[in-house]
Image (spheres, rainbow, N blue to C red):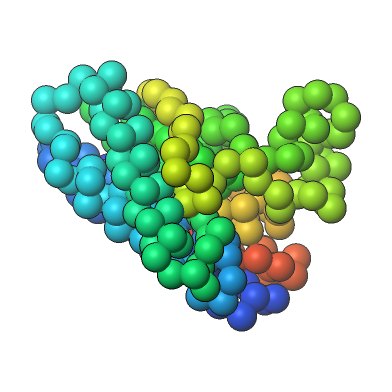
Length: 245
């Protein structure tokens, strides 16, 4: 597989607190992709997201083996998320100006004909096929709980006053629980990882059209960023697209 990514400060923020990375794994053709959306005071959100990305990747490279089963890979990813959480938490404890900082995380590690997906917070992973876009991850957020309880609709959540409140993040607590998913990928299917800055400005239908109909993956991401800016881009926007060669 191959991957491309894009990140932008948006139109209303003073700094980009999103961080993403794509690196090769140990198995033939294996890719690791991660997107983090930081939160905190001045510079601390960016510190949190960059710390989490680097710690997650460093730990994963240390434990990855080419012959891992899916279950072993799930365990490895969960372990590395806990290590990333510890890195952010430790920095916040050692630097009082960053107390309470945190970051979301969504990652994908390809594994043969599929991938292991992990998330904490409200950054998302989608599978994009020839016919539809499917959200893989569940947001750890206030509005997701309201949707699940039937109090609001998914459309109402897009403009809800508490749409930015997340219930789980790396950093604020000593221990964190992540959600892990196994997905299979067909030859014509792609994986899209993104921060909520894209989600709040582009609909599922628009993301599907850009990714599934776009001739070149990088152009698909450029189109989504431009669409977000047309809608005001109130937050940082980051997206990574994994696709078959």
